[in-house]
Length: 323
Image (cartoon, rainbow, N blue to C red):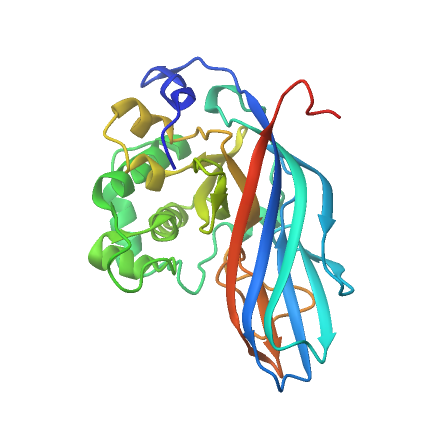
């Protein structure tokens, strides 16, 4: 994702946020593809994630272009929405499902975010380990060392952010990246956004700071098309709410203001899809999903096919956004 001037203006100095949030509206199409459906599959079950209205974005005009009968599913633990279908005698080859919608997305500006209250269940979940977002003795020791002398949630979270930013390298050349494996991140100190933010969440949780994973898309490619996701993390501050961080994106810049601004601030050129790790959907998949941005297809209780995603979009003129 390229760096935007709005992020450079979010700070008048490292300690004085002065900008006000702005917003953008996009018309977008998310295309979920599962390739390689076997010819002998008598029945497949399919789950597809959906974007939804949350604090920083509003989703409208959602339409599914598919001949199959889709049900709307809901994940109670993380409050995600998704589509679900059981397809008898599916055609072999590729299953392609385009989903179009309009999204209005606002910047997250730390100094201007209105207070929001999390539920007890959300906070408890934000402190639990996941299969790959671990709370091992090594992580607990690191968290204590990184936050030594720091007081309060915000200071401790900022120290953890700086550690991840300054010690992780964005690198998709080494095998195993992208799973969001905290222990791997500690071992090789490299990976993609998933790995950066898994490490942040583990360290935050180890200090009793609720943290959660957010995944979606960057809306920055010049051709307005991407086949890859982007993710970030959020931690909870009493009296403030869920505060976003993106050390992965910050690591791509040498600009000190940009590297500072991604603590607590996000640009509007991104789209949020789902929250959480180890997701247990209802209807259930055969196993909890590590994260949920790709479609999932199963037959006879086992995953089938190869999932792929694509997002196309164009910005809507602000004078026409309400049409």
